[in-house]
Image (cartoon, rainbow, N blue to C red; front, side):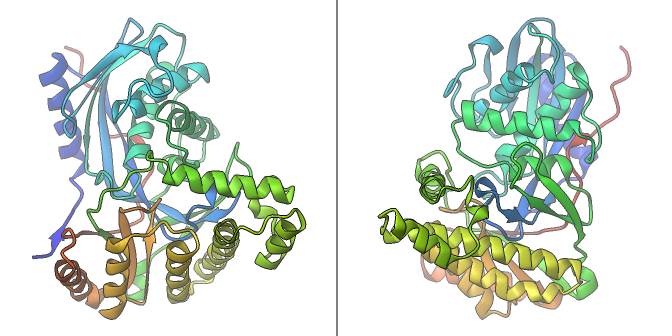
Length: 414
């Protein structure tokens, strides 16, 4: 049987977070804030190389019910984690705490240091519920970070603003700092940017050549108007970015940029130029060249995809998705048997194009599918996984959705 993962209605999800809050902390939360997961259409592993990527927000969201504290303590609980965590914000440090709580603790730590959460000495109680699949490569960690970040900005700081407000770039930078420095995940800033700056019905074209304020261009993404759907295939293979493999890919890309004497690989015009530059300094490692080849060609693919969307040529995305997956599988080596099975089966069942999405090493794939073929493609992917004795996949439809913000009205006074 094919399994579908649908988002909860926002009102129901916010109430679920409120109930968890009351059961854990007593009393009432001051409000509920939420942030979306995301899917990246194309432009994978290039955000930290100054590249171009095309993500959009999912309707699946993480909800955080929050109440201010008068001390400098953070108390957090999640309905998807075993034990709550509590500690002083001043004691938060790289790798402490570890696990899921690091993403929330890191946000509280970074927001205070960056002047976005008021003076030191202010903490929060926070209860988390989520519809974003964990470990699926759909940015559950950034959704967690950004939901708490907008809450802190609204409660203690300058306010979280709207998606185009400059404060959102500052909040995104704080969330990236939390993930890099406290959770110790060497990710780029794409996930936090889309969680905070997305708009319903649109895909973002992010130019990551400026790390301090990624240039955002909004592109209409109305797949139903073209008779299409974007099917997300959660392979349910374990997806971990803190085990060193993601970090090693980023380190290789940054090492190559240093050898080539450029700030990022965005400045490299072609694979031939990169090869010549590396050979000129005595670097002939074929693995390093393969990593560079992926980044340079993926930036080119993402740029072409953005142009296609701007021109309304949605079906032209299909071959770009296919070549992106081949590059991620062969040159960047971040795919896995579950992802390859899903992509191959989707194409075999009629998908126009398909690729892995997210950091890789498990997680999800996406398939551009004619609307009438969605069920058949999902069934074919499920059967292929069963034949290979792989985990049963689950599915969701990717609908461009709204950014982080408040998900309920303020509670009435007691």
